Amino acid sequence: MNINTETLVSITEANRNFSRVARLVDENGAAVILKNNVPRYLVVEFGQAESEQVSPDEDVMAVSKRLLAKNRQAYDVLAK
View (cartoon, rainbow, N blue to C red):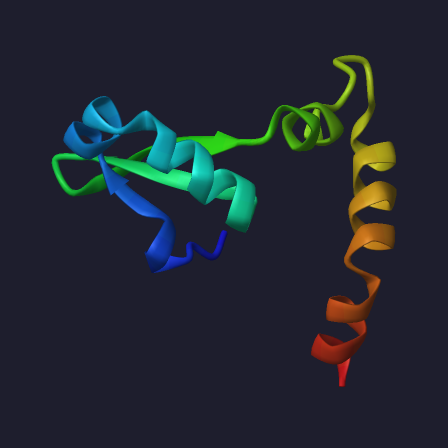
């Protein structure tokens, strides 16, 4: 996962100014909250989190096919 350094927020700052965290999520799609200078929490829009969920009975082949379809361009570039 690539992390935009502009979306990093210390846990102290997030605690004091959560509206800033919400604004970062609105602008960038996600914010990472650091605890002891280590990425600890990921804040995303509810709709994005909901779309990333996978049903618990989805088998490995279905997951593989979904990931291949989603990332087809990247796999084609890597295959060259």
